[in-house]
Length: 337
Image: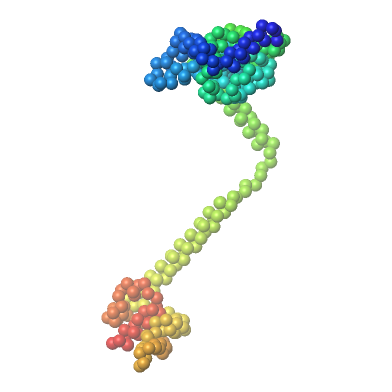
C-alpha cells in the first residue's frame, strides 16, 4: 500500500479510537445529521414519531454506505444481482478477510470495528463511521489491475442472463433493452414447446430401449382384493340364511316344517340344559336344576303358528327364533297351562 492509503487508514483508525471523546462525538454527530437532512432517502426517516428516529436513520445510513461501496466496486451476489437490502453474510464480521477472498480491499477502513451488525454498534462508533462515509474516505478497490481485467473478461464471456440483471452482469457495456411483454410470452412458449419435445423424445427412447417388465401388484391392491372377497362371502352367507328362513314357513298353511328328527333331539337336549327351570330347595339356601326332559316324537311334529300364538309366543319370536327355542317355549307354555 502507498503512504497515502496507510495514512488514511491510520487517521480513520485514530478517529474511531477517539470516537467517545465529547468533542469528536459532537462533531461526528453534527456531520451525520447534516448529511442525513440533505439526503431525501434518509430525511424521510427523521419524520417518524419515534423518539429514536435519528438513531435508526444513522444506523441505516452506515449500513447502506457499505452496500453502496460493494455496488460501486462491482461485487454482486452469486446470481449476478447487486446487494440492496443488507450486506453479505460474514462481511461485517471480518470485512478485510471477506474482501481479500474475492481479490478486493477497502482503503481507509479503520481497524477495530465491532464484529456483527450495525444495529449492535455503539452510537459513538456509528457516528464516527457515518462521518467517514460523509467525507468519502472509504472505497473498495481490487488487488492488482490484471485481476480486474480478468474479471471483466469473465463477465463478458458469461452466458446470457435475465434483463433485470443486465447491468450487474455487463458492467462495461450499455444496458440491454428490456424485452416487451409479448416478446417474453413468445420466448416462454418456445422454451415450453422445446422442453416438451425433448421430454417426448427421451420417453420414446426409453420405451424402445427398455424391455417390457411384468406388472407387479402392490400389497395394497392385494389387501383390497382380500377384503372384497371377504365381503362377497359374507353377503352370500347372509343371503343363504335369509333364503332358508323364508322357505321354512309355508305361506299357505302358516305351519313350520320340522327339521330332521335326529338333529332335533340333539338340539332339544342342549336347549333343555340351557333353559332348565331352577327349583328352590326346602332349606331355601341352595338351588337345583330340574331334570332334563327328553324330546318326544310329537315335539318334532308340525307346530301351527296359531297354536303358538295361543300359547303366548309372539309372531316376531316365531319369525326370529330357531326351531329348538320354539320347541322349548311350547313345552314351557304347555307345562304352565
